[in-house]
Amino acid sequence: MEGNHFDFPAGLAVEAVFKYGKNINRGLLAVGLILSAIDVGTAVQQDVAEGSGWSHTTRALVTEGFSWAGAIGGAELGFQIGCFAGPIGCIVGAFAGGAIGGYGGEWVANQIYDSPGSKLSYRDVSNYRG
Image 1 (cartoon, helix red, strand yellow):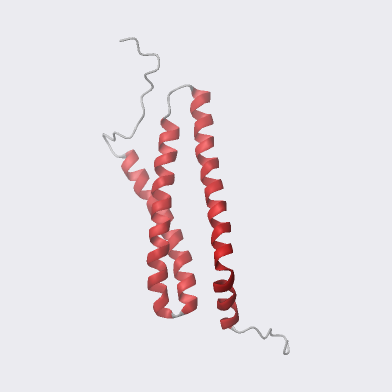
Image 2 (image 1 turned 45 degrees about the vertical axis):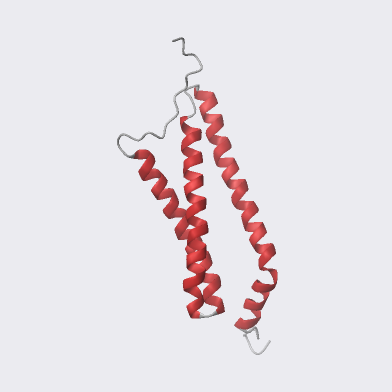
């Protein structure tokens, strides 16, 4: 340490991310899957408590699917674009692209689900006596 500044070159940080990237990736994936499972589980509990079919569960599943697809696609695209700025750009681009893609996927799911005449709903027919 020299004066009040740490002697820590940016290349060392990038090297550490590339060295431990697989473990970081697995950890973030596990956290994301757990949060998605909690979201869907909460929707199931809400549907069971209301007894009105599976509308909350189907909406949660659609939203999670679109969010994951957007996040994965956004991370890939962000990584490729960010790499034009160098190794640090690859990392920043992947994180930013994943976040933007995840929110974008959620937005698309909400637009589809909330559109007039949407057919993405579940009708409970268990008590149907036709």
